[in-house]
Image 1 (cartoon, rainbow, N blue to C red):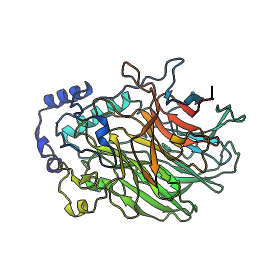
Image 2 (tube, rainbow, N blue to C red):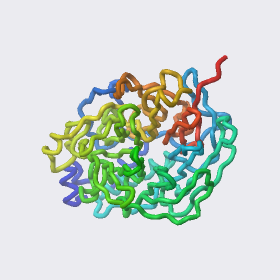
Image 3 (cartoon, helix red, strand yellow):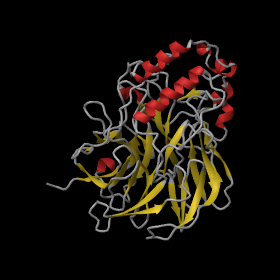
Image 4 (cartoon, helix red, strand yellow):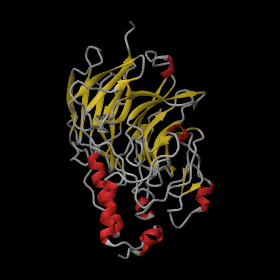
Length: 462
């Protein structure tokens, strides 16, 4: 069956397919077909990862851990010397966290917004979209978004939230990132940054939102999560906007303003692209000591289990990081046509590879001057919530790791802080997303399949 010319230009191998063959491919994908990693996982981790040749198979590897939830009495497994407790349970798809100055914890309960399919799709693209919808549904996404921000309060400091209240339930559209600047709470909806008046200790906001700036969103919205962080002086907001595709298969016109970090003037809403070529940036953080902005990025899929490493990187003002034309610096992605050698020539290599397809989302820096309750091995570096792979055999991610920093740069191998999210049968009991350090130095982890916020802290001395 002929494909539209625009699609054929981008994907010359897929110009003709009978409908029956496409149906078989879709079924095969859902049956977890595809390649298996040839390299040890550690080869794709660190400042200089090994990057093999792409695997250009027509059928992507599909190896998701279907969402199941935690059995009674089960919980994640902490690293040696640490313990894990349930800070809060019974939430509805909790994804992001913000710890307020008084110790209260805000949780964005959210999910994928309703969205249309891209226009002018060929049969192959439509079937691929159908397959991906089924895959994401098995992973726990796709339910109606709760569109709620809940406030959790631990009144006696025992590491368990004993009160909760709905802080916000109006003016929200698949909310994700949150930031408090003075007496204003900023929320990154999937289509706009909005703000609400907020006083410390307040447990409910009744005021209507004020829009700060529109963000790329509907009619179709491939990477819908938008995160934000305030500059240290509070004058600017930095907002993540993921791409609208895997590798621009919907055309670059659909990518306007996307695959980027925006800098937004908090007072006026004026904005510019601070950095671009970042396929799907999520977590943001200011590194202690250097004050540099860092992010974690989900890289492209469907060129093999060993490619491409997701990464942690500092973000340079005006920097271009390759997407969609190249990955990990100047490694050209031949699927993207026409090529852009001038852009590739200035693509920046990330600072640190986290491994292929781990899906890093949460990012929180520890500070040895502040977080004295943490053990020395976790006192200086970055905690990262890794949501877990769908496009790799064997699976990767589904854990929380810590990347040590020395002299303002990541060093050595990641330390696994929290694991056990996948059952022995390959079901997802939970999936980590946002991470944050609480007022007592405990690590909070939002689990959007387990519907919980877990707290990791030093185990009591025996």
